[in-house]
Image (cartoon, rainbow, N blue to C red):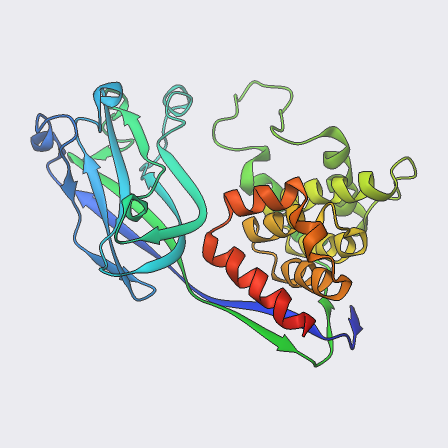
Length: 332
């Protein structure tokens, strides 16, 4: 089922390439003692038309991490300017004891999509995975004196704005209610770090009302009727719900949230909503934000908001420039 209109829309499209690379350090014990800040580099691998490598620090990157091993990502291409995100982790083999898992929260790291530029410090990933050297137990992370690092990398190769005069609307995918249950389990409600004797699970970084709305959608395949929330408050709750949907890979709910948030766009929230759409890769919502500003001819009012100031500070300058040029073009 879908909702369509014949309004002209300014759309943003992109191409992305995702791949996984594994760096195996054989004879790990022989790498120790090379010194704090010194590293072993993996072979160069290519993803999305750009070259990358993994750095492994057997004695840590600095004095604060000298009791740990750590790893980071580096872009190796020359004269390159690319958007990418990654998930870097030490690979655990077999069953890792619960007491070890509780002590290694940094054994993996993930970074939101951002710009890598070959000519400055942004060519390095800002997030590093590290683990205390004393916790590298044989049979868990170490197997036959070998340690493996895995990098899941997504590279965005193109970012294009274009005017689409065809029918434009938000296509909501078919109901996938039964699939939500498994994904909730898989993505963290009952993760591997849960105490086996615990009688309850704490869901971090989510308001009770948002969690209640999430459960309502799972069981009813629809958004709840929240009579106490109106206007801006309801729109704000939907933004939090969209973040939760992205967190647990509930694609249908994510699209439903985008469609509904579009109804609550105004001058005060459109810039912050655009930043939210960029962070969570919501192409439909992003296009609607640009269309709202262009059609309402209130660009100057939007620029005066705190949300726009935050957008300029947190989003890549190239993205903001494209956004401004696109809205000016749409006014003419």
